[in-house]
Length: 284
Image 1: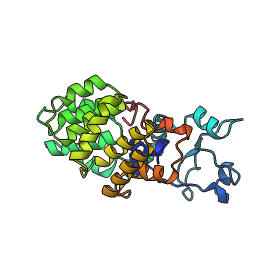
Image 2 (image 1 turned 60 degrees about the vertical axis):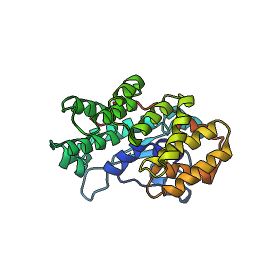
Image 3 (image 1 turned 90 degrees about the vertical axis):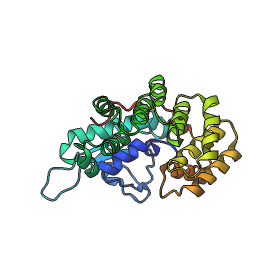
Image 4 (image 1 turned 135 degrees about the vertical axis):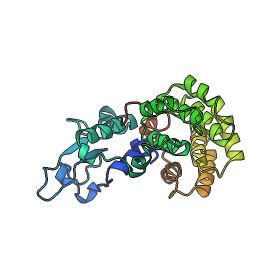
């Protein structure tokens, strides 16, 4: 969960809503059907249509495999560990198999709603899938009286990497922990560490039990790690996990796996929170 696409909240949302996730333990030979001999432990992602009696042939697409390459080189060359690549492929696969691209039930119920609270909730669900273009179009067509419209717009621009627009939108949001955290995310994502650190420290100090505080704990721990402050990183992550159990937070899961592994030398950390989030290509 610390590195790679499965630590990305949007990837996790898309998989949980539209796919049945299965982990193949190739040490026992489970990957033979995909041409992977036992012990073949490179990084792969397989998208596959269901096997249905008397149904169409199963279609399997394997990412991460490239002729003549293995291990880290193959993973980096194919992009299989890049969240942006995985998001695109998940959405592409659904587009090729529309029979499995069924609107998430809650979203279907809210799609045509007109009241402010329902529209806001629908927009939040769209943002969870990275559907930024749809969100911005919806907000443009709605009254400015929608609850948290400015905050939602700021979040959408942040996901596109449009930092100035994100900050400008945030100026119209009401003061409070949600706005504080979004301002912190913007500083963190754009790499403004000098700005992000005091914002994170202030948020954790004043709102440690906020419903999204686990993200702040993870970001602060990661910045400690990047500053070679490993002991401080571990302390922050343990505090976050204690307050926000791993069963409830993806960010606590990421911190927990980092605590277990504590092998800071992995080259794949480059795919963690440092990559920019350009998600406007997602599910339209």
